[in-house]
Image (cartoon, rainbow, N blue to C red):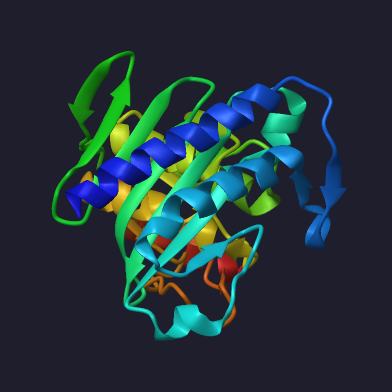
Length: 266
């Protein structure tokens, strides 16, 4: 798996480099379901990832190209988001990423999240630890030891900050919060130990929105579930996550679930 990781990191870097070649320029933008957008940068990255991952012969499930039914019979499946945080990319904000995950029998085994504008590379292999490479240095990742609700440092969506999220912040009296575009970067910040919690109650997240960063956070000591604690399963017939997303340092996870359950009753 280490050889797979090394080769895939290079492919992800290549895709990130291509997106940066279009960053800040006038590019074509199209609309998808639920007002999501796709650009030529998404498609360019998708093409590079497909060509680079083809060497392994495993099916690919991508946000931009669902693929065929071969993935249901495969032990391994790639799950990729060629450009996570497309709205940030279009608006000239650097919190977008390229994300590649690999699942085995529906469980994440490898994850790579690359923020090309900041040259930050997060990666992990199951049971091998999680790492961040940036500025020519490599460090092993570990989550924080924050354990109480009012000490939580929260990372939230820059573009999808709902009333539910604000109510959660109010109940726990959270005073430290930042808002970020890419889910991969949000979860990467928790893996670094700088933040403790992120949640998104929507049922519209795709498997590609969560797969790669999940293994990175779990290998850093954190936890990823649905908002009620549900186990996330990948490579489903309908590749969306109906449970929402809760990602944390693990220590505040149960308190977050209790708070979200309380909110669902109001």
